[in-house]
Amino acid sequence: MNPPVSVIRSAAAEAVAPRKNPFAPRPGPARRAESAVAWIFRLATYFVLACGLFIFASIVWKGLPTVTSAFERTDTFPYVTNTFLFRAPETLYVFEHEGQKREMGDAAFRAFREAETAKAAAAGQPAPRFTTQTYVYAAGGIWPCIVGTVLLVVGSMTIALTLGVASAIYLSEYARDTAFVRFIRLAILNLAGVPSIVFGLFGFAMFVLFFGWNVSLLAGWFTLAFMVLPVVITASEEALKAVPKGFREGSLALGATKWQTIRKNVLPYALPGILTSSILGIARVAGETAPIMFTAAYVVRDKLPWDVEKISDFFLQGVMALPYHIYVVSSKIPQNEYTQRVQYGTAFVFLGIVALIAASSILLRNKLRGRYKW
Image (cartoon, rainbow, N blue to C red; front, side, top):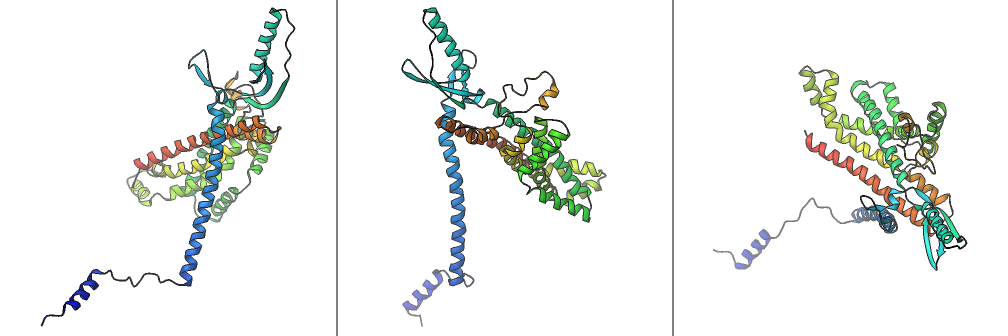
């Protein structure tokens, strides 16, 4: 006897309908509380991202016009220049001439005044008088600050990576797990939390006074390198430990020495992780003000670092730097609309330089990751 149609339909519906997962979480007070906590964490993360985006957007919005409005034509190649990027900071002169309000930097104003005086003398008229308002660091550009910042970052990271990778190789590959080595690792971790002002005072006492380097690039390089050294050592050691032991054992089994094994079979595969530490170090080194204020930075310097007679003078001279320039313009001089645009323009260029250096490290790291895989 055939079953009725209703029974067949109910059986077919049960076969098509998805079965309920017996392991699925059941709704309840604990589950609702967990979901609420997850949403709190999510909203807190979005809030932090929104705050960071707002800060970056405000810097770009107010700083970009300062850079883009500074283009001028020149009579020599490349026939265009940017006065904000490629000139030194100057005092701004604001005055009225022939019913028009004019703004000129110190050099341009002096040349303009001399030309007007000569024109008046040729016409037999008295020299014109200009009623001016002056604003310090509100004209010119930040070229010496850009050069000094790049030199400080490149030099200090070169020293930090050299010393840091060498220390990480010793701690990871040669040192035994003794109490003294554990104490060294603990000291390195503690140094990572020391405030930058302490490193600045240390660099001033050690390199500026004791070694007699004075306020110079060399003193700033070593101060910033020692400040970022704990981060480089820790990250490099972890990158070396992440390389499989089989690489070492296979190399040693084929007759390679310890150093040959490290140089050929360990370091190449740890380089992406080491470059990650350099990215973290660049972000910290480039933005520090207190250490370079004591050891390397000048408020104003007319000459560029390479305008020296001897090579040794290049290393034993101070430089201007973007973070210190921002600090001086924003806190050490009277504030007005002219200094505000310099502040945001300098901050915009500073973020761009740091992003460019970090992006270069990221691209190199990704290239090495693609080459060395296991």
